[in-house]
Length: 341
Image (cartoon, rainbow, N blue to C red; front, side, top):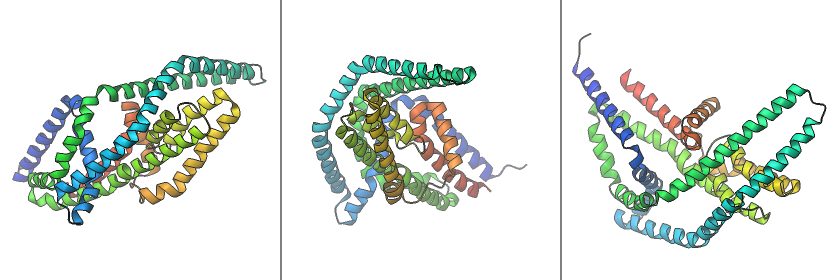
């Protein structure tokens, strides 16, 4: 087969992209401020563009938006951060007691069905399943605690993300044009279409799902607070974050709240379970469709597959990122095949 300029150009582009990905992988531990800043800039860009259309210079629009956001964060943080820290400290202090009560409840339930008429093999199977669930729960709790501690230890990186996001927002168009110049002329139309499709997908997955997660977190925290369930704010934040995971997030987020309520009384556990059922019915029928709009274009089986794959590779973080990564991958594959075939 005779080599052409097109083949050489494709080989150079492939090598350049491979080297770039490899370099980014090597320095991945130091990239989180830039990644968070990029996500923040992407989330805020529509609001900046809206203010710009109203006649404000882009720099002034970004500054005004930052002032509003920082005001909300400071006023909200002044009330929520002390409660969050207090809940975190109380949870750390109460954890041994909670584990002891959970173990007592487990042995009580175990003794009930061990004395029942269930076949011996079935009782052994139930024991193994419960022990496996217990190990998974402990592993999830450790992962969640490590994640929270990781956020605290990376405080300096988070502190500079608004500055990085400001520069990204200010030079958003210039950055897009610079990337466009790197693309061969014959590919630029397809590249522009791919960016539009990616923006459409991520608008639903990132902007929409984050909005839904915040609403769910507020509703869960408020409901648990009214029911006097301990650590209502912590559980609400966890439930909101986990709600981003399709299909399984609602169940995973409800489990800690129902477990803590069950340690108090079965009736309280029933009320908490009913609260989560009502909230997620409301989310599925009203909140989600209004905010998310069209789906990301992935079959449910595909979504479940990538959720399991992401969870296997990177745990909870992998499950959170699995769907947007799969949706973007689908868009890139579609437009890449158009260029190459």
